[in-house]
Length: 141
Image (cartoon, rainbow, N blue to C red; front, side, top):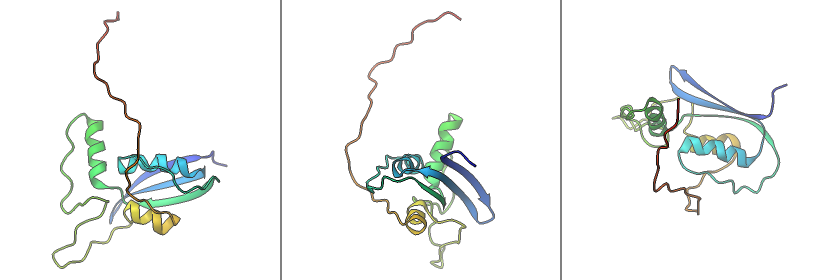
């Protein structure tokens, strides 16, 4: 038996990059926290659902957020997004107007089609920490 929690796994397939989120006994607030990392902004739980749920969510990550995080981890500027990448993890239409197939939907689409939930962008108050000064204190080695 697996312990309760959210496990996230990134996978590369011939049709593209995708993320699988496996959750066991998770609240909607915990899901919202996990999604905050994927959309690079706060996600608030406003479902009113208090139970714990088991679910799997497959989605194509937002390439611009993924590139920014990879750049931050490497300590440098992120590389430019791949040709045709657009916000939301999708791709812009080809010259004939069709959108290339991927093996996973963008996150906002996957949430609605797989879990029956909807992410809506809204303005809400949030906590913010401002550091106005930082001093380095010498320490002995």
